[in-house]
Length: 277
Image (cartoon, rainbow, N blue to C red; front, side, top):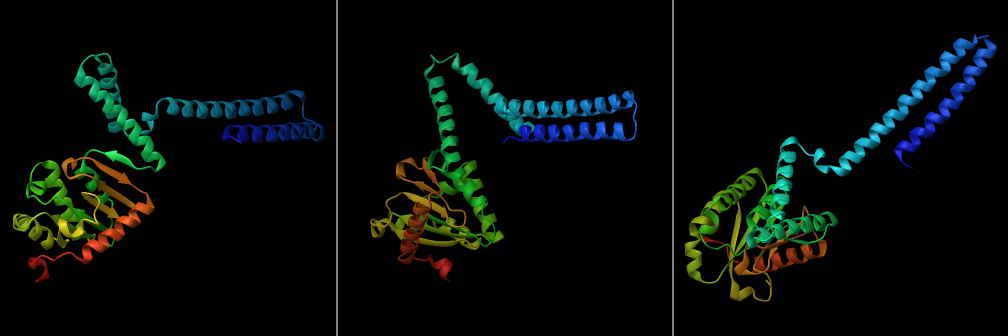
């Protein structure tokens, strides 16, 4: 039963009751016809106002259903409306190849949001932003586990996303979030090239380990992954040559499997000398 129908039934019930009481009071106390009429008209006006409120409430719901952006903040409304305006303008230029590609990405965003709403896995195209959202959502005492192949200095020092990602790691570790990161290396030379990054992260309180890829071939079918068992969320990068493309998942079975793999890899990993001392 809808709220509007329930309110109408309540108004009708009290209306009938009020009319009966008015007729009884008029007969018992000998109200004049005009007084009884005024009282009943007053209730009729109250009933009309109640119906008007119901109509306005229903209209508000219909407007929000037709224009969902009205439930957003003013800044978000501006952004969404501007995006839709650009989208409509670009649709008229569909003969341009670059425009058609951009419109496809817009459709992909729609699909991604629908999958996220259902709790399904979906593809996201920025490993840094995805990782930052997951890590930034953690509270002190919670844990962030990472098996990472971001083993070059420029992955942590170059560009705004990389720098912001590094700073977020430092802030969260110092705030009390437990961050465990295992670097997957191809050669010993990579270890020396990563020394500065390892030192910075270790000093911030991040637990750093490293392992060579050859020793974990059977344990790591992915290029890298990051998980939070506390939030039952994970980010998986499937291929080294496509680091920007990751799968975002909340599948509990997959998260459990990744956590097990993390523990197994950690058990055979090495601790940097700077951290063990």
